[in-house]
Length: 283
Image (cartoon, rainbow, N blue to C red; front, top):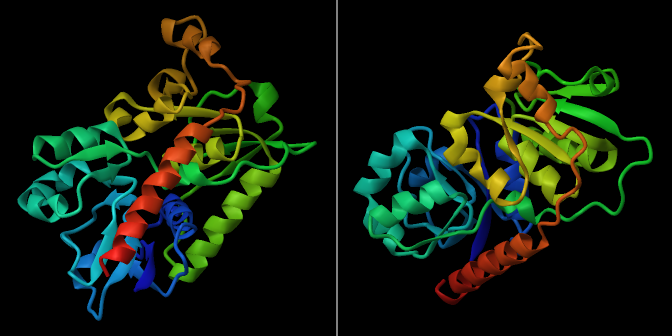
């Protein structure tokens, strides 16, 4: 059997590549790369083992071709793609129980008669850092509109997960360097990005996460693992300090403790190991 690492050629979100790195770490080796959005075009010979930890999908590249042997862990279906996935429900039934990233996806698959279990995202399997940096930095990641206390903002570094389109290998290198920078230099991460929050939580970095109510089904894993999701709309810059929304700013815990997600990490690793073993048996 060959093993593939998933890439996202059309994505400008380095979070997709961070997910790819976390999933590939559980493969025996990486023989080739497969584009998340063109899995239906993969040609043999198979089987090609692939961890299906990703957000699906941009376009109509579903279901994957028969050359792909999927290990479903951390699977998420975008709302706009549910009709397409529903039309191909028998494909997922071949591999149930489907390990999904969030409870919303689990409920959707269950409504189709497909067994599902919430495994969460493979980024939660990243190893914890050995120690916090002696002189760490506050990192504000795609949260420029958030009203951050001046004491934190003055010593912060601002980053974005939006990157230009580039070769897959270059994007993966960017993702590695992002993770290393967070691990080695962050004392606190303030972000609106799910795949900044989850890997940082896994590495033992304190995280303050802001999300929107409309996006809660997708970002719910942040609260499921023990962190708080603060309402992004209520904490934007420019709110009147004396208003109800302005006073809400004082309720943010800007000094959160690192979270211990080792039980979730252990279940994730067991889930992916069991599915990879099943692929090897059935090759």
